[in-house]
Length: 407
Image (cartoon, rainbow, N blue to C red; front, top):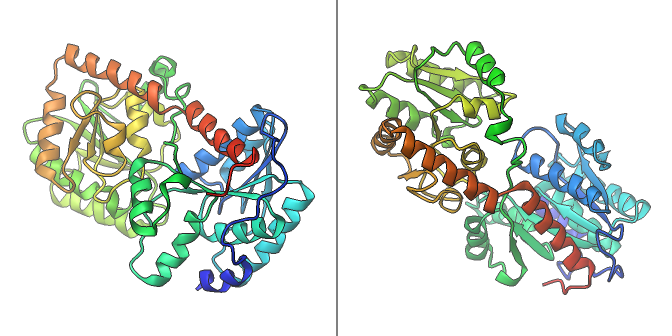
């Protein structure tokens, strides 16, 4: 295993030595290096870019090391920098070479804090932080599978930061239960919504109409959408089963998301839809570049994940736009939805309960729908914004830069 081989590169103390940068903060120009596999689309990538830009805006120097991707160009807009390294590789030899590459980068650019956001690059990053005496932070993004001792060992690197950021209380609980992470080193920082982008007042009617026409949606027919990449645990089949039960409602249903190479699963879903005679009612659509407009043309947004979401961006983005949202009652959704006030929660895998709740939401009168929308928007703006996420992350950096113990 990569973890076993790389452990030889890591100091026996298990955490980086404390650097002599005490008193220097982000506002004083401290340098933060974030390390992740690549900068393609996704929640990890989005959070990395948001924090990188916030560090630069706050007066620090911000560097991101990754194998590259579509989002790297967003870094330069606010002064953050990108360094291309093969940190997406799980090959033990490449990972070991990445230790040397990161050591050179840390020393040449006088990095103060190293922040690892994924397991393979984290093994290289913690070794490099140890060798250079820099402060080390990790973000635990999900409840990784830990079915055997080798997998658990590989995952454990994400708990070895001097501070470990959990993206939800659910993830923090998982870390304490499975990896015995002391509560004192965990910092819960929920993912944040860009409320400027996901603002109902800023999504023009023209954008909504253009998307509706592209997807050939009939006027006046309610739209129910399940967004998310096409993978089984996202619950597309539960959603299809729920739609089969909605015989009393004339609706159009959208399954929106990239298959990320899972072409066989896409074909399986389409076959099931057509076999149930729902080809005119449920449409499977590829990745959408204008999700704010997609949410705004939707009457009900669904998150039907059969496994707990570590956070769940769909749930917060939909609420930020005042859209009615139904999510599965586990994982991060329990933290981001106030059940019955800003959205609804249904049991995992329960198509009947999901269908009944969709019908309930569709049958709401305009006044009730408006009240839900107002509460949902306020809830997200009060608790789950991008600015709050970035400010809390910078506070973690400053905590360590000011000489806080490793924890």
